Length: 177
Length: 198
Image (cartoon, rainbow over all chains, first blue to last red; front, side, top):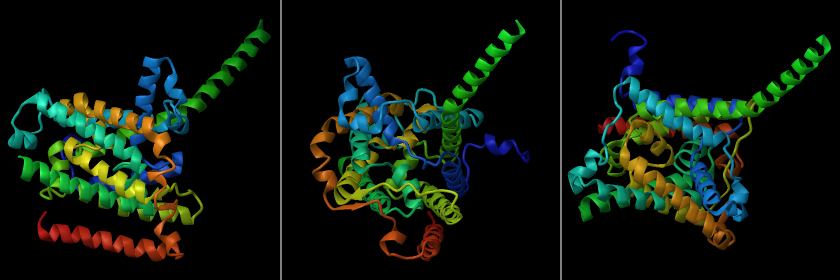
C-alpha cells in the first residue's frame, strides 16, 4: 500500500490532484503543441468522415466540414488517447465495467431497462453534440481550456452549460421520475 | 556498389525524417490524450453518477476538478504568455453561441450524463450506454449542426457577437490585475464548497 506504484492502482484520486494535473497538462499542451485541450470538433470530423464513406466524398462539400477539415489531426488523436488513458487507469485499478448498460443513479429512478437508457443516451448525445458545435466548444474546450485563458466566450458558455444542465437534471430526477 | 548504397541510405534517411515530422504532433496529441483520460478516470469523471450528481448538486467532484484545473492552468498559461513562450488561443463568441448554444449543450449534458471528453473516458471505462447510445448521438448531433451551419452561420451564431476577447482585454487591464483576483476567488469558492461539506 505504501509503494509508489500503488498510487496508480487506486481507483480514485482527490479531485484536486486530478484538477491540478489537468492544469499542468494544459501548460504542456500550449508549450509543446501550441494548442488548448479540446475534444468536441473531433466528433464533428468523425461524422463528416462517416458521411464521406457513405456518400462517396460528398461531406467535403459542406461549408462546415471545409472549415474544420476532415482529417485525423492532433485533437482526433487526443480523443483516441482519452479512451486509451481511461482504459489504462480502469484496468490497473480493476474498475473496467462489464455489462454496464444502465448507470446506478439512472436505475434508481427509471429501472434497469437497457433499451430505455440507450435511447435516452442517444437523444442526449444528439442534443449535446449539436449544442457543443453551436457554442463552439464543450466542457473541455470552453469549460477548462477557454476559462483558464480568461476568454469571455468560454466563461459565458460554461455558466450556461451548468444552468441548462442543472435545470434539466432536476426536471429529469425530481419532475419526470 | 558502394555509391549506390550511399544514395539509397540517404534517400531512406530523408524519407524517415519526413514521416517522423508528420507523425510527431499526432503522437504527442495521443500522449496528451492518454494522460487526460487517465486523470479523468482517476477523478471519477468518466462515470454518469458523478457527472449527473454534479448537475443535481449532490456531488461536487466535477466542479472541484474543473476549478482546480482552471486556477492551475491560468497561472501557468499567463506566466508563459508574459515570458513570450506561448500565444493564447481564444474562441470568438456571441450571445447566440455562448448563451443559446451553451444552454442546448447543458440540456444534452444532463440527458446524456457525459460530455464529449468524459464520454471518451467512459468508453475506455467500459460503460455501454456511452459506447452504444451516447457516442452515436454526439456524432449525429454534430453532423446535424454541420448540415444546418450554412443557414445559421450569419444569423443566430452572429447575434450579439463579441469576438475573440479575454477579460483582461475587455477591461483594458494588465493580465495579472485579473489573473490574481480570479485565482483568489476560485480558491475561496473551493474552500467554501469544502466548508459546506460537499
